[in-house]
Image (cartoon, rainbow, N blue to C red; front, top):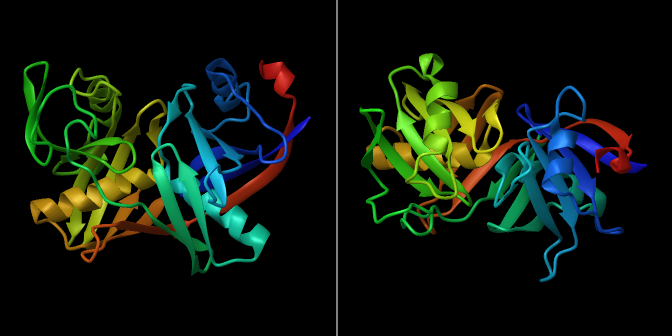
Amino acid sequence: MTAFLKMHGLGNDFAVFDARAMPLAFAPDAARAIADRRFGVGCDQLIVIEKSANGADAFMRIRNADGGEVEACGNAARCVARLLMDERGTQSVRIDTIGGALVCEDAGAGSVTVDMGEPKFGWQDIPLSEPTNAERFVLTIDGATYDVTALSTGNPHCVLFVEDAEKASVAALGSRIEHHPLFPARTNVEFVSLVVPDRLRMRVWERGAGITSACGTGACATAVAAHMRGFAGRKVDVLLDGGPLHIHWRESDNHMLMTGPATLSYRGEIDLKAFA
């Protein structure tokens, strides 16, 4: 039997495996089976903590519920950081990911702040399939046009500002945008409306996972896009289905700081052979 932790950040939930002492490899089929909410553990993402090859406290590997490996996950970073800080008795850790290194600090009251680095707008960095002014452009789907912002916050995002995020067609339109030919690696999609100055409502369609209650990299993308559009300052609260994240797009170095909770739901054991 193999031990795992069930954790979540504002309801964006994870099955977390520690592979630092004994390597663990998950094929896409196995990851999908474990993520299944009827026959598996049930999670939005499967997280594997590995040893870092370059001196960081750990390397975090991420597979979405569809089995695909992805570059970054802000909510998972807070959860892994919480585990590592508690384990080491420190106030900060550095976590490596495919999307880059993340510096994480204890923010008090059970919260963690993650330095998510700088947003990227280069069409090849997101990536997009053709040269595009990603900061603002029109996306066409079935004859309908959408005014969007695309960027990478460690993984690709497409942000739409709508009149009321509560009424947005997150499932139907989110899936279409995820698979739009402009996004060769697919994309996460955020539907955003302004609540009051510096407070945004966001709902998300996550690439490879569908509708989730929270997305940390998506909240960062939303905050950056909102500031660029003149809807908010550099410090905003982003209200997701699972609760609020605080995002500070720091002017001094252009880094995005994300602060929110990291919660342990339970500890368990799983027979990985049953999912092979």
